[in-house]
Every structure is written in structure tokens, then in C-alpha cells.
Image 1 (tube, helix red, strand yellow):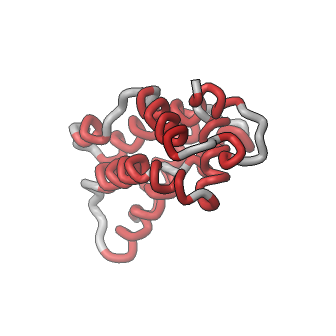
Image 2 (cartoon, rainbow, N blue to C red):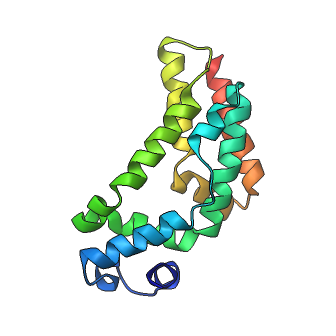
Length: 156
């Protein structure tokens, strides 16, 4: 219903698409219902942080590929629409939980630790996936592997 329209709409903005907060909430519920089912807590069970990051990014990037039109439109309009920002708060909290899980277990400290954290934060961003997969033509697995290699490289 609303989610399907959001994934394919040709409006200039989300504001033109949604008439009310209720419609925005209904869309978010549909988006969350269509999530691929991965949970950061499942990734936490993978002890090796590089392997955990690879698994998570492959799942995240597959989700981005499936929802790229909708995600791009929402990301574009989110800064301009307070109602969408409010409705999307649980999604932002979910992504923060994912970053925390992926950040655990790396064997670095100090500045290098901050670099690993930055790479992980960058790796889980939709725009990073879109640049590597859509603009540069990489497969999702290749894009994930590049991000894991970057995290590994900044440790040493």
C-alpha cells in the first residue's frame, strides 16, 4: 500500500506523498515489516569481528539493494520533514545498535580504535553502499569485503 507507492513514487518529496503523520507511521510500519529479518544480536554471536562485519554487511547491502529507491527517497527528504524524522526514530536507534555490535571485539586502542569505529560507521551507511555498488558497479559481497579490508587496514 503506502510502502509500495513510496518505493516507486515519482513525487518531488515525501511531503508531497504523505498527507499526515498517520500515513508516515503506516509507511514506517510497512518498511519495518519488510526488513529482511537480520538482527544485530544475531551478529553478536559471531566472535571474530572481521567475520561479523562481513556477514552483517552482506545482509545490510542485500537489504539496501532491495530497497534502494525507497531508501534513497527517504534519505533525501528526511532532513526536511520533522514528522518523518520523528516517525523514523526507532529506525535510527536500530542502526545505532547495529554499529555498536559491529564495533565490538576489535583489538585496537586509541586513535586506531577511532579509525576502526569510523570505518564501521561508514560501511553501514546507505550512501557508502550506493557509491560502491551502484556507482562503481561492485557486487554486494565485493563492497562488503572492501569495507572489511579497510577496517583491517586501519588497525595496523
